[in-house]
Image 1 (tube, rainbow, N blue to C red):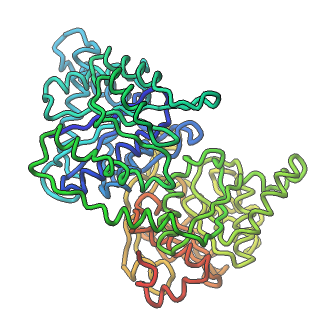
Image 2 (image 1 turned 120 degrees about the vertical axis):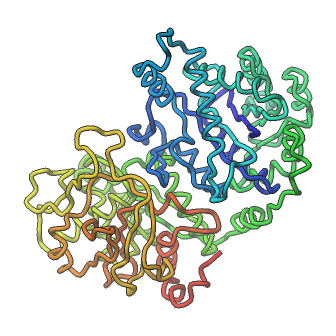
Image 3 (image 1 turned 60 degrees about the vertical axis):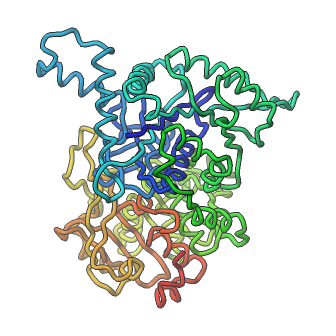
Length: 562
């Protein structure tokens, strides 16, 4: 196995995940099979209980793993299906070591960070790296490892040491270190400053790892003088100093790496030149060029709880982008804090209230994504009502489906106190209830998680046609509450139809309101399986409906395919 380790220095949020994914794309384009591992040094076992405000979205895998959003980047870029074990956390490592200690596996020895924690890290990396993730048999050729955080962080020290040992054991030809760092420009001087990167590399070398490549993040292309200085003080050849400057869209990053012959340098270092071929990135080039040249846009109102941080809905944003590109459109997402739509906001923050409603009314379509808790629910219900009454295309995902069911129960069926047990456990009309596939008291790993099958109840519905008249669809889930199966009969009296159910018939998966251009709710998260060039069917239908092209597409599905 060949390993490419991607570390980060100076500051967090430099784009290590995109850099690691792009390296994987270029190597895959050279005919190699690529897998990836993300190391998160935090003590949480997984990302499941972490706030979207603090850590961005929780990405869900087929096997139900709740992982860091960077694994979403890997899946989208590399078109692979990862497992929960491809995300290593300090919590998982400590947990496995302590379980062994309790079972007596260490035979009475003193359990220490070195060698027990570091050995556990190495063993995890080596065992997970050989698991195929691309649907083929046998291990991949290259494993790209991203170490989260910034070099020098206390919590990442055991991982740095384990990776140093791994480098020593596998040898120079099988291990390549790419260090991502920032090259800032001070406004007063206007000069590209290399000193922060020098210090970051010095810190890394003091810990026993010397970078073979520098991936320098900058707003403008790196000057030759800056490269020379970095090479001199960081002991990295000029030809191995890669510049990842700001680009119009992230699909340019693999092209940027190829243009600097990063693939040749990495392949040469890993002694893979003889088995690799010239990189074929025609699809990436075409996709990047299409997006750069788009002139028409579609306004999408995103009504959610975590709109203050775009990464909270990263996969939804990417799925919208994939669908828009397929329709030759540029997505124009208008973020609306759901609480700003509520009546209370009209009194407390009238300007925000007026702006939120103005934005909603100017949108071509309305999307209510997933979320937990009752904050902003009233605003989401108002948004769903507006979309239904004004025949504006609406897509509700997870909580968004439950919101639309509550809205219809209240405003169409007249059940004024209809609600979800999550928000009101004493509601007389519980249209959404807790469905036991987990625990009410323990938050971690208690939800209905991972890929589940949805059976279409009728071929005569929009979503079935969008999925090319398939009898079923496998999508990923992440929720605790479901539409109450005992109230389906009453709810369907309003005109809505539950056209997709699980294999037991008791869990409602897809809802449609037939007397509407596009009013769809899904209990699953279709955004997690959307890919560049292969957009989610539900998102594609949503965008097509927003621009009045859904009917011709359904009559000839090839019209909307990219």
